[in-house]
Amino acid sequence: EAGVVQSPRYKIIEKKQPVAFWCNPISGHNTLYWYLQNLGQGPELLIRYENEEAVDDSQLPKDRFSAERLKGVDSTLKIQPAELGDSAVYLCASSLGGTGNNEQFFGPGTRLTVL
Amino acid sequence: DQQVKQNSPSLSVQEGRISILNCDYTNSMFDYFLWYKKYPAEGPTFLISISSIKDKNEDGRFTVFLNKSAKHLSLHIVPSQPGDSAVYFCAASTGSQGNLIFGKGTKLSVKP
Image (cartoon, rainbow over all chains, first blue to last red):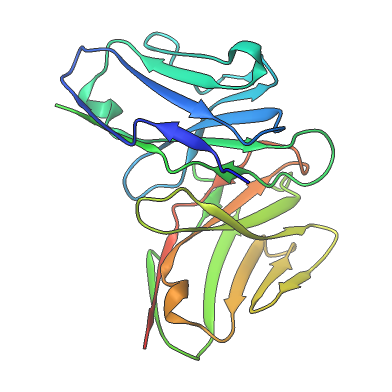
């Protein structure tokens, strides 16, 4: 079974430039998450999707960040414009959703460096 | 304020001995707890979980203990192996489908 796929793995951009990250969750997983992980910290939730609906985006800085999950499968996370403080690893995760445990499967992440 | 705390940034253990990783939480609404393991350049992978209705859950070499009155949980790895060297994250949620709140992680080094 293929895991969560993310691309690109690494991205270096200059500040004020836009950047986008892509995530393909595990097939059949209805719930998709985007996390931000700063150096030396644990993952922090940015947005959670149930199918194509964003059910929790309270931690997403909406002035510069946006996300979409068209057709309830793949998802993209965009930053425009990027700031120096956005340098971090952006993780995508998915889970089955519904009842049961909340085991989330993570992708390898995209490491963003903003110069 | 951090709701999930892992106060030891690192831990070094000899191969074959027991590794004990600790985690404290402040939110009494948390009732589901998980441990994730992370290798460099990879995403975290699920290790083991425990519901607040239990005080112990075991899976092979890994056992998680939950002390609700102390708001404390621990992960025991016995015996420790060099391949266990990784960063371990404690996470908690309200309900099994709630959003996960992660600690900062503890880097475990198991020396041959």
